Image (cartoon, rainbow, N blue to C red):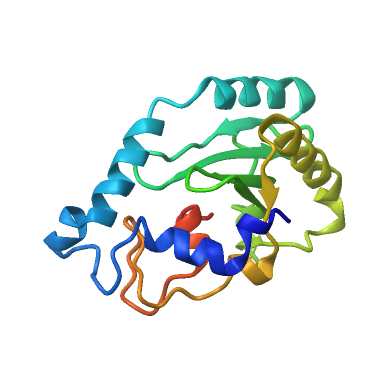
Length: 194
């Protein structure tokens, strides 16, 4: 891992973009130096970047038999996101699995997880998401997606032990959290993982 991307350095970094000890509903949150810095960063990425647009096009070529969803959320959080379905997925299918990538606009880091949705009428109707290790049936998509991210952006993938570090004095801007609930993954990327 890049020495500048240690857990301590990333925790310090998110403290530059989120005001410590202030709830996101408090007017001081948006008015703070950190809140203004985060707002400026988010506004700079709202329209996307040429690199992101090219990346999505590359995903569509490399995963030609999959559904690709450019699910970027930069209006709310410092993150780009894309979802890659399993091969052969058809919109409207009641069961689908996706490999999801999150790319931070705060630091050159990314995360990958899988999302499972079951909307059948069975009593076992369930939805879940899982960070690595991912189930064997999606590991080839995971490896390919990771390779594409690293070759396109040069980003570093964060392991779970860094992603899930508590940052109890921060509240992500779009999270329905109180103080003491945030994790580093929420601040570097988004709380909205589904």
